Image (cartoon, rainbow, N blue to C red; front, side, top):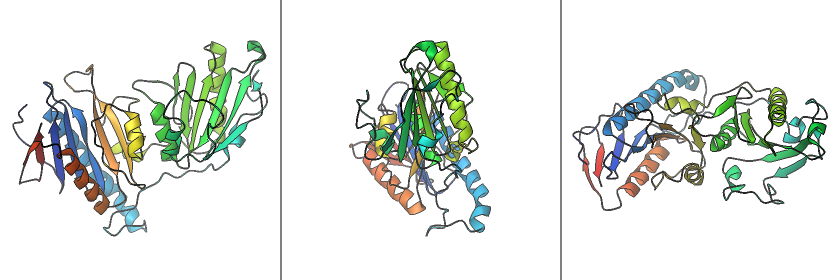
Length: 350
């Protein structure tokens, strides 16, 4: 596949574009600006790549300008002058077990047993979990503690029909991250917490530093109604207002609703979508990244959306180092490439 020109970058940066050789295109683009590494995976055309790089670069510039007043008012800066990673605040610090709805807080539903609690050493160590990534995925998102209890109702007999779990994930970013693992394109939402996803027998939402997971053991209108009511009780107890992950605002708009993901480790990134091209950028313990899926403008019903990602590192030096290593890993497979001397872009043809 031939490319007519190499795209332009508006900031001092380097980018890399890889073609995987399919007829429609299967392009990987990587760019680094300030303390951010961002780009595209599996883009169908160079036009898609160009639009993404321009949009994200402009979003970073706009975000940096908004943050400058806070930096001047005492926000800690690193040795390169970049502001340290911004963390969402949270108000509620209660233990998960204290947030569980009590006797008859939900009409005609009561606890079927005493609550069980888990810590970082014991999570799910007493039962089988039908997934190879659990419970490890929770630890990759900063898991601290969990409490759970089952609920039953006389309407449905003496057996429990709902399992409610509350996870303390240490930060709102982590709580959204594990929530995003469970999300999928075009989900059905309920307005609970920061929007709850309902899928089959499950309900998930996050609020403050907590991730809430509710499972119904059967599909029935009364059970689903009780699941929503349980979620509402918990959301009311968590005093934090609904929040938005600011890093998502650096992505181009119009991503597929529900496809947005947050990750903090390479392992978690691989678990989110195992079809992504490897290798991945190497994330350190202070890095945080987001990604989302996009359809091409020419065909909103495209079968294979492409992915845009943005990763924030604690400082410019780290971002440059990670980008350099990632670039070297990408071009290490004996591929031919060209360098545009005007803007430093590197174009690779596989």
